[in-house]
Image (cartoon, rainbow, N blue to C red):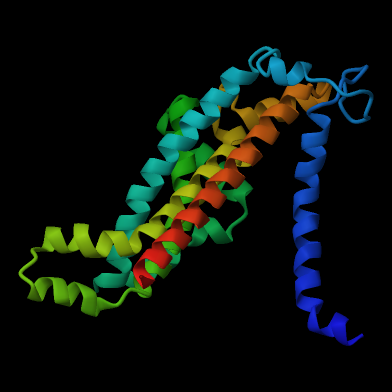
Length: 264
């Protein structure tokens, strides 16, 4: 009992982690399945056919490429705008600052379907044709608040004396920002960018409202589930999961090496 009490937090953490990873394990296992029917829900036999030809299903890789393209541009747009907004909210005092600070977090608080319907009404009233650009604008709007939250938390934790020291050493505003402020804020900006990419790539509700005839990867998966689930979807999901894990591991390794180098 004493051992259980001492390790209760660790055990709870491991159980939670296992609960979160279990769906990904199921997807990975079934990416090697060779189903007999249209639905890939029951294990039949081991096969590498889907991995040899991940684009064997019509329009799958096209929708995947479109989702990656939208996620990339949405990440760039949301990260640039979100970082500037975060710096403005933390460093400057202006009228309606409190109102802006509250409004910027509304997309995080409201249900996605409300924002999706609002954007759809806006685009229709403006006469904008639904498609790639409406999805991109909607994704930037949705991801913006998450970037602001990540960057703002990082900027609030910065020591202003470091920037004052740079100015005392005759560094100009641009030099101070590029050599001191930006490197310190970089982890928060990177976190916001990665979160934006994941949210944009994975989004279905907002995309479904504002896509028109454009089909992204989440919409392709949803449509395929109605008539059959090809194994290639599991292959793409497994590949994306592995890439995400590798990015996190590499980031942790780089951060650990930097800390060791600073201590030396």
